[in-house]
Length: 495
Ligand SMILES: [Zn+2]
Image (cartoon, rainbow, N blue to C red):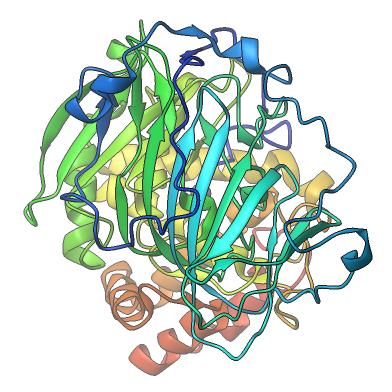
């Protein structure tokens, strides 16, 4: 997520002005009682633009109805609040299925009907001896849960789904309903999703832990005629749970070009957004190519796009939904925002953070590298302007929001939002920290350190300390005094 232009604080979740039309009359064809398709059986994995004119969705080309019609109406759950128990579970089982969030998700296959607000999830877990498995499901109404052996006992308790299912006994299948989230944390009225940082449980049963990465397959149906849904049919590499996203709207997309590695870079805009979109993405192909050449091979497919997200007029920034990351319509003309979200493909999404304590590994490193990549493919004046803006952003927030940006004495104890880590102070101090390191060892030497770190950890969760160690290991330079100044203490190191 790029936050820094929004100096007012938390990102806005403005109710959108335009509401997409959803198809509410399509009969929901569930996968109930039979195994869903398995990860790996997907088509060509090149899903991108999806529209009702595509053959896959010809059958869905029925009359659309305003999505708002099912907002809290048709989708309202008569048993919300009553916490239903599943088959085999009655009142006597309340509290009877032990919670166990430890089994990691190995893969997810998800079908979302955004007209009916229904979802079908097939969740495969990493091998473990766990006999039950739990998922966050606070925004869901669970209808049915089963596995390859048939019905399983399940229970919804305190916003979580607990399932009597051994982790090594194949996938768990869940049929459920989700809701339009008025605050935008999940499926929003504007036709797009934002699960960051911990709201995946509003869209599918999940573990919001940023370290719990998984590849996924995704299918979306139920949106109105004339609309386009943008989402990857498959994400081939592990990414944090908040990576999954869909955007539905009247999109137009254009290929911008191809990188040396053969990655096609595109941009998608909403009505009246073409001029800004093309202006903001002018350097995007070159910047993406720079990242591929200097940091490493991109792992989320051979087609990427910057997608305009209608978050409202006061919203800012973007969101790293690789390979089709979202950029606020208000910032579609800002190259740094496009490059920032693209750069997360290497840091934050490619190498994901082990815990929120390491948030600066994602945002500080990305803010630094986005300035570096954009500067490298444009001119020094552009790069200087970015650093000037970074400095002004830090000026604007440091008095009110100063925080120790790397509180890494723990892992998993810090709440990103409640503990104040989600602040521009972290983004900017992280960026300036890396610039200070580059000043000592050379920016090109630091690029090479990032590249080796990326090669070592891509597809995994890592800690910021791992990267600091890599600097010393590769260059002999000890970054700890700079880390102490910029990341581990309060105050403005520029003073
Ligand atoms: Zn970001």
